Length: 371
Image (cartoon, rainbow, N blue to C red):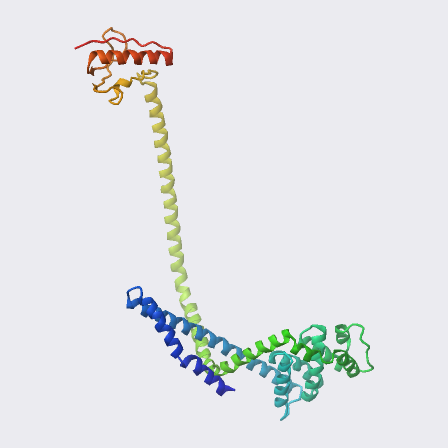
């Protein structure tokens, strides 16, 4: 199996012909934009992405292999502690795992189930025989294999409450083994039937891919075993360095923090002053505007609308206006200096004054002095 794992890795990572063709095609497409540099960048990006993905996949497979190895060690310790280790025990466990995978149970589930059964029976052969009964019971009751195996292990030791609870209404035997036999009879064939179902086939396929990943991960596991201790040591050294430097950094950081606090307070004070100054200036402008409005000598004066003062209103006239204080009659008024044909001007002004009187109800006095 490890040899096939190496071959698969070489096939995936080493055979780059198809990848090269795809990159060349991508390069041609990018060249269509008119630059070879973009094509090269596209190739580099694809290769970098493949490298990152491959690295993550390898790390995940190596981790799965490490977890599998830990499970093996845990079960072996339980077998040794129970005094059940023999020359055949390892082979018996491997055969039980293979049989369990045919029934859609993972190697992890099988090892966990065997652990409680070996502890109870003190015999690997007996434990693997009871495991097949626990597999049927698990499928019948819908619980995981560890729960069913634990119930069978307790029944073997004389406590059949957990097993009876899994299968309500089950007749109990005189001994724990008889109860196990009755339960196994009620659940006979359930594991095999499930393995042939759609869900079972899907579970078996998923487990097969997981096993393939673990096999590949075994190739890289020695590398991780060699690298990880160094990484852990470097992390510890970095932590030690931080602890050594931190006492010197804390006073400096406190001083910096105090300085920043002072700067913040000063800025807050300046901003407060600016806001007050702006508010004062705004109020002063409002007061000044109100004062000017009150002393305005032209307040309340309304001028009539004189269309002849517009170049568009009087064709051929050149009109210039000038407002002055007082008038020729001695009273308050406005004098207009208008240049043009006097007869036309008089007609236009007379019409404008009539319109003004009609709209406002106030009569405006008009006198025309010719120059």
